[in-house]
Image 1: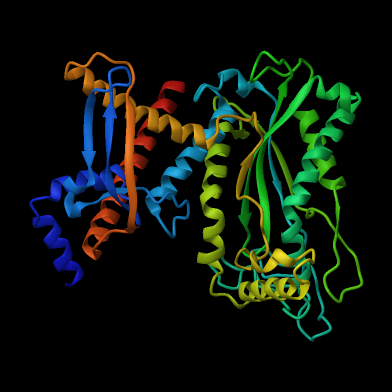
Image 2: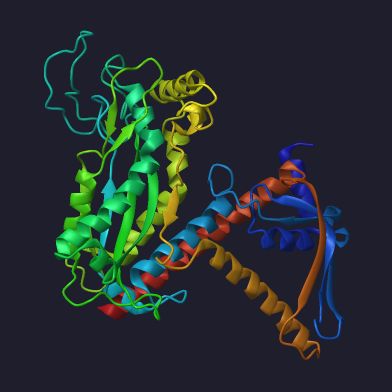
Length: 453
């Protein structure tokens, strides 16, 4: 059966409305989990059955649930939901006034930080290099062209024989450790900036952050982060910062920590020279202000949207922009070679496992414990909302109860929609829903802007 025939067959099916309702419950997931079984909602006090749901009564005798994959290449719908959750998590910690985070958080000192990888060799970029002459291999030492943003050469080495592929893979592998040491050094630098000891600083302020990783065109990872200062009052979750502690103190401490932190990487097999890993020279630290009265400064909403975008975009850049490039394949091959030569107990034994990520083994999004809400709490809120709808329907039917007990018995029946037609219909519906939500958000933000004016 062709795709068109499969679509028509589902549209003409007497079960189409029921199937569409089930697909909508998954958010029109691209590759949902197929389940067989049933669930029962009970009155926890009396054991009375309130509602029953059985997969056998659904079209094809199955029910579906989200795949939960955050990569847009795998599932646009689940990636869109993950991006939305990340936006709320980051926005709550930057602007407050939502998800249980007080609005006063926006008044705390905050900066937006970008930490980059160092140079591993000259690459083609959108600006002309100042390097002149030729290298030992007879190639230009720098790129004298000004490439367009869509040029396929962007990020490729000017001389692949000069490029330090091993150095990039080693740096990438230890980037999470460099970030960990940066957060430790930041607290020390902050204490010096405030003119107190580390013990005294720990009793005055706490450092909170939300961080995401992004792959550059050259295949090197760098980090974007919101870093915030809170006060220290054990009875409060988001205590105000003491008077006199400002964004200037925080920004100076970030710069000092980023420039001062380093890590001595274990030797790669057959190498004799120790590598001291540091952040790249391109360090960007900018204060974040409330959305009102920007005056050219970064706003909390703009930064939250920017970081949330990279929470789902990070791995996509690696595949979409660079998956076919010889340069990217060579980085992967270098990671695999270092990992295979390391032996089972070597410091780079796990590199083979992370070769597909160019050696980067860290989380693409992370946050400190008290920055804001967790992604798990947001998913839990959706579950509670669904249970509340069950209770509302039960009350409408005459049941007097404040909570329900749901007992489910489900078994895995497969992955993905059963036909190409079902998959195409779900994809088109997901696209329409995303466009509607994006348009609604634009209208909402435009209305807010008019009110602020």
